[in-house]
Length: 346
Ligand SMILES: NC(=O)C1=CN([C@@H]2O[C@H](COP(=O)(O)OP(=O)(O)OC[C@H]3O[C@@H](n4cnc5c(N)ncnc54)[C@H](OP(=O)(O)O)[C@@H]3O)[C@@H](O)[C@H]2O)C=CC1
Ligand SMILES: CC(=O)N[C@@H](CCC(=O)OP(=O)(O)O)C(=O)O
Image (cartoon, rainbow, N blue to C red; front, side, top):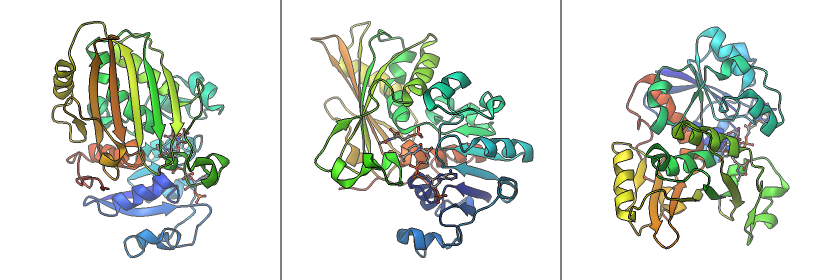
């Protein structure tokens, strides 16, 4: 049994991780941390976990925390996982960071987009980008896993077959994404205020969202040349889910059926990617509560563009579920361990 620490267990991503790990057959929750609720029982802060998770939240120093665990998950605001990375390396343990601190390979790019100094830059080269569908082998042997952002997960899975097979003009990629409000975390803010989000639909971070360089880094890696994208996120009045619609000009003539077949081959054997038949489109409700990413691909012969739709649950495939998938790779056990459940419908 792997002893697990969840740092930031009282956030939306952390609490979802605790829920998933509580039923994981090869992991045991050793430490759950919180600054605000230290001393309280997890079930007191989250009544849905009453009788399911009996742990008391603790506030520990980094060295003690790492000492008590084999694998540590950090689900903290960006900038706070760096000391954990250093201690994990010192003690020879393993880290899965759900935040952004180890995702960008270029430290200057991180500092620019996050307006935060990187205090563990030597570790960035050691971290592996935790998207199992692309980096499975590297993740298995890694010490620090940089769990991807929610928007990048759905965008990259949607576009990867096109870039790998050089089927699109790289200067024409547009990503139009919509997210549920849980994506912005549990903390109170005007952005997620009930009256601001209900009966409302708005864009934010236009041309400035910090997931842009993460998406560009990974698409560039797939294409073998530098790729830029227009990425526009929107906030929708729902709790969970991301739906991304990506557009690009095709460089060759293919039908929707041919491209769908190519996607099927690309993702063959993947436990969590479903390529839908032509004419059936992903919806957030179909993946809510599961670790699935649903994809559809359509060619518009009139404009020569391909339209890719991808849907995930931002808290599961976009955060906690993907983190458990990465844990399974680190432990060298079947990737769907503890994740082998369908979503919730309706
Ligand atoms: N929500 C989502 O859909 C996704 C989130 N992520 C990423 O996961 C991470 C957590 O996100 P989310 O759960 O949404 O955020 P929340 O705001 O819901 O939770 C943040 C957590 O961090 C703790 N925390 C806050 N400030 C500090 C601090 N200064 N030092 C230490 N701990 C602190 C809080 O706990 P306490 O006050 O109890 O200590 C809380 O547990 C972020 O990096 C986020 O970007 C990634 C993908 C998707
Ligand atoms: C709806 C909403 O607010 N979503 C968040 C993205 C959550 C996420 O994945 O953020 P990290 O990259 O920090 O892990 C946002 O746009 O900031």
